[in-house]
Length: 187
Image (cartoon, rainbow, N blue to C red):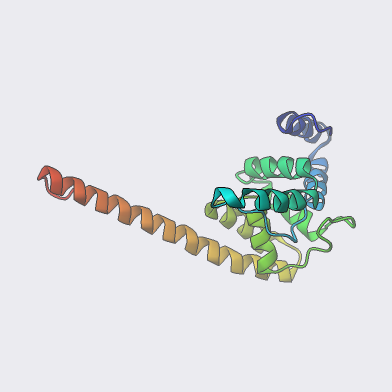
């Protein structure tokens, strides 16, 4: 894998997986998880222009902690694979059998670790539920299963809150429109 482009590298990795089977795909995901440092919080976007310089220097330090290219490839692969039936076995294998050279050191199962992984990979709450459910049901490690179950429940609550908020906003918008037009409330 060269650092030519993320999309061409992903295409190459998919071709290798297709040619040599699921064991190669599993090792690819495991290797990518090993190259990303999940011990740090991802950098936040700056809120104002005068903080830009400080944030850039912090972000530079953070990105030097792990291979940016491996992160980009892992991010895209997880984004694509999370909807696939084989995703749980791939992610469980990568976290149950980490490589000795793991950037973040040994991955100690905890809700905080799973939250950092979800944030680092920029998983939306609905994707977090899929990720955590895969680990809660498929991991070989009881600690990882327990931590994933805790994070799964929190992610489900976040999704439920977002859905409720969207429904409330939609109801309010419909009510406001009906008041302005003189029509009755239509749901």
